[in-house]
Amino acid sequence: MEKINVFWFKRDLRLQDNPTLNAALRQPEPLLLLYVFEPSLFEDAHYDKRHWQFVAESLVDLNTELRKYNTKILQVTSEVKPCFERLQQSFCINTVFSTEETGLKITYDRDLELFSFFKNAGITWREFQNNGVVRGLSSRQGWSDKWYRYMTARIEILDFKNTDVLSYDFVQNFQEQCSSFSGVDTQSNHKFQKGGREEALKWKASFFNERLQFYNQYISKPNLSRYGCSRLSPYIAWGNLSIREVYQEVRNLKPDSPYKRQLNAFASRLRWQSHFIQKFEMEPRMEFEPVNKGFLQLSQPARPDYVAAWKQAKTGYPLVDASLRCVVETGYINFRMRAMVTSFLTHHLFQNFTTGSSWLAKQFLDFEPGIHYGQFQMQAGFTGTNTVRVYNPTKNAHEHDTDATFITKYVPELSSLPSNLAIEPWKVTPLESQLYDFQYGKDYPERIVDIQETRKVAVTKLYAQRKSTLAQSERRRILDRHTITRETNE
Ligand SMILES: Cc1cc2nc3c(=O)[nH]c(=O)nc-3n(C[C@H](O)[C@H](O)[C@H](O)COP(=O)(O)OP(=O)(O)OC[C@H]3O[C@@H](n4cnc5c(N)ncnc54)[C@H](O)[C@@H]3O)c2cc1C
Image (tube, rainbow, N blue to C red; front, side, top):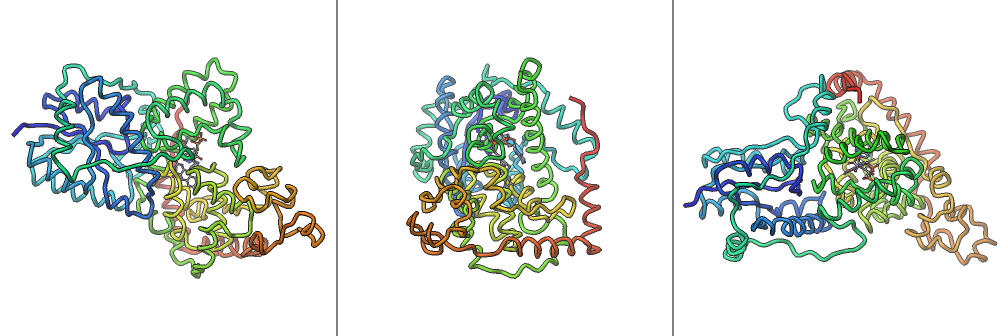
């Protein structure tokens, strides 16, 4: 049987600046490129068809590039272990190369299972660092320096020279022979950003060349942020772009750019990306329970009716409902709206964060477990280290969607109203109701809670919980473990 190595694509769907791939290409053994669509992830509550569509689009793009090198990616729909078992029937696998994944419990368990399978089968598994995230850390001592070194290291150009990869025809035939091996069927939905390197580069170029100037001004606006923010998140999350190449472009642009403030603000977000993923790498139980264990004792009585209203975008608060409908429809909302809908669920409705975390992940095309859970917990007030920030959706609408453009686009039942009433439809008088042909409570639901009241209750309960001995000792533990000790000068 032919001896081969396998490069297993995970969330690193690119050829450029992919050190794992280059390391695999430097080996003497012929290389098979592989992507595995895992049915268990199709079923997982965090994932949606939109994610696999994005991946499939990325693979089409990669295969177009790979045509130049007379190879293609074997795409398999199977759990990963049976996939490798099947490959072993045809090949003698020497080494598997993949990029480290800071994932959910389901992918962690899959990797543990594979680890022992590879060990028993005599297969070496080599994993390489992803993003600025470091495996096996117990504290952040010196993390900042490591991050900086990673980000400023040389960009790895794809190195296909002298390499023996399994040929295009061979992979094609093999794919056809194995009838159970097939990619997913996807139907393009133009409302989602399209996956793939080519699209990623277009979004990156348009951001740096045209949209950057609006970054700071538009970042909080639900509508304008769609233009003024980079929109690179799905490309970074699925690895069409490496965080390092984006970071280095910022550094190269900065000396001559008239938009230094914008570039600085953007660069700090790139750092948060790694920071949050690193935190999740070190505290993966955040998927299931508060990072600060003191909040395990917080009582949040379940109200399935509240959670259902939130998921159906029928809370009666126009900016909340518009944001939720928008993310379901397009896969994207900006940071402030993400924080606001999370705060609405966990503060105003006072529901356990797990009632909405996976559901929201399913909607985000850019779902990245580390950022998602870190942010969700921070917004819910479960770190015990940050100020509890309870968002007022009405105030936010007046400040950031002044003319109710965003609200009326996603909640069209409010579009007959002037903007101030579309933001606060409960203020419609009987006369206005006739004038605008709008009935509050019938055409649009009444508010499910009174946010003036719920705000007070949430803040009181969260701060009381924070005072507990356990929450205080956890607070110190979190600060010790996750505070970045030294900032590198840039
Ligand atoms: C509850 C909640 C859940 C979130 N879930 C995700 C998620 O699953 N995936 C995800 O990529 N982002 C998540 N974010 C962070 C942030 O909202 C998005 O990264 C951002 O809105 C993506 O748009 P952009 O690429 O235009 O951002 P830009 O402002 O242009 O930022 C550039 C990049 O920096 C990173 N970034 C930006 N903001 C943050 C942040 N606050 N924390 C960490 N990294 C950041 C992202 O990689 C982003 O692509 C979440 C935020 C909240 C409040």
